Length: 309
Image 1 (cartoon, rainbow, N blue to C red):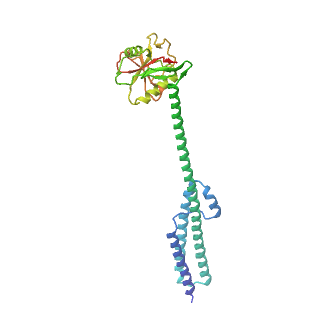
Image 2: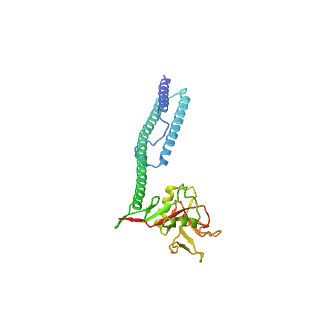
Image 3: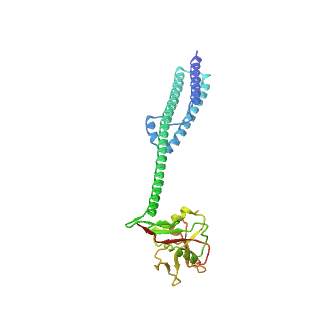
């Protein structure tokens, strides 16, 4: 008769252990705070709290398991001795309280998981929208750049004067009310600075004078559109060192005010007193001084257009 209560406690203890195993197998292995206040604060906590929550539940599960084992050992020690009704009732209450605490932890974990998943979903959508807006901004910038180039091209090719249209010979292009010839053709070959100037003069012009930032930018941009930047091909222009105190002068007699030299240039090595321009993305660093008799460069001619009324 004295062991009857013990068997009742044993069955309850086994029932608790079975239910605990069922929860362990059916629930994810995470840990979370299980007070209402903790649940309200969790979504606003930092990533550190997100990492600490699973660790907390794991520790709780370990503690509960240790309590289960301790109670089981304690019960086994007592079941062969005399148990009073008060002992049986106390053990039953401890096991019931432990089971309720474990259920509350599982419920808190599930609620916390739902809230965390909702926050992650909202963050993912925010990231998608940011990527979308960034792409739109990049596309707009490309469109604006293309439109700017198109407008500049129209300005170069379609200028009008009061006397009528102005035009250039075939093979020449119109820019800033001047005609330019770029010796891209293989037929033109390569020339020295004096020979290139003779070619321009024979067509009613001279080597190009690139004496402003806008002219420099337009010239280099045109070269980049026709040449591979990796191909180091220079083009003679109408600038030369007079050898008078190292003064550089344009063919129209004006002294150079602002140059767009490459790093370390001009260095005047081996009597390099003539200048060539190259296809460089940074048009502020596109000039180099070269020996005037070097027959290794192309050239750019310049002349006034013909008015057609």
